[in-house]
Length: 269
Length: 258
Image (cartoon, rainbow over all chains, first blue to last red; front, top):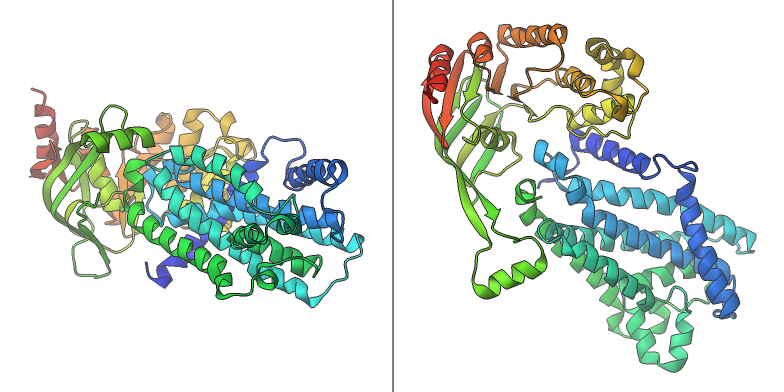
């Protein structure tokens, strides 16, 4: 797969059009339409906020806790949407794969791009909420970009890897659904990582070595409050590169597996 | 799990044949019983069962298509015609053998690929156009002509699910004929619409023939073979049994059952 083929004109047109239709179809036939892209995460946030911040009173000492929570849930939704849509992309677009010849990665990327659009819309909401909450705009906001990018690359790698297995073994979709539910609790989204640290520093460190936890804490650090515990300010040894290595590793393995298997997608899907 | 893979090369050479196929083989792995799913796959491996049956579809094809030829491919159902077309189109990989495609190739395995019933006619036109490699700007230019040809102007902003199947095919056909390529691959897309629309389609094919467009047509209509093709091949059981003038091939095809 040489570079000119990957980015050639025909592929760009196709990617754009597929992403557009995916996004349109998502909210087709609903009264509120695209508004749901905003409403869904906001409602999920409202539930979590009422349960965890108001009833259980978790996270009281973190500044701007509601936005902090919203930021975590949004980025988590981004990760889950990206991976689950990406994993199913090949099967969902099976009809296309059987009828025309084009680089198969395009359907996976277009499925994840819909999640990117949703995330960007919500990012605007986070920023508005942050400003309302009295967070001062600062150049460190830009540091969120590489962290968001990291989540995207990890999702893409997982989508390539699991999506190519899913063509033959559809169990992957269900397994991933369950796994992601479990993972939700392994990432400090609804509970502050400081809470874990008071019980066991080792546990907190292990949690922070997960790429999603690391990325979410980084985004919170840069966008909301520098009081956030991050992988970088909490772990002081060379192990801190684990999340980055893991992300790049998954992406490379995913791309290689996908390239090898994609030759037979049209027959197997 | 590693399966042998033949080669499919794309070249651009004014003097070379449009398509060269050498010793092409293809077989499919058909899952036996319930080989789908992880559990069954693990069981099969433990019991040493393959979990699939090998179905040989193409058993060594050799042929060449010259530039400007209108080639008909005929044969019974299941003889391997569509598989051949899909391999030429680059959808399936050749298991063994070498294929050389000279120039740009536009395949129509089916009309209206990517059509979505929930989208409007307009949206579907742009989507289908993108699959043929047309940008939005290019589609804008040919947009009115497409609807004109399809005779469906009043339905542009209706959802596709409200179209009759005949209307859908007409729309798809009208987009498809816009595609330009050195080689066209057509799988049974001739007979669409009512008598009046069919005439239009036939005119399009006559034009292709007059302009010496390289076309490969898979069909069961011997009338079309005789009328449009300059050469035909008869495939039976994954092998080329006859190659030659359309009239002779059409006769041989009809004799398959006698």
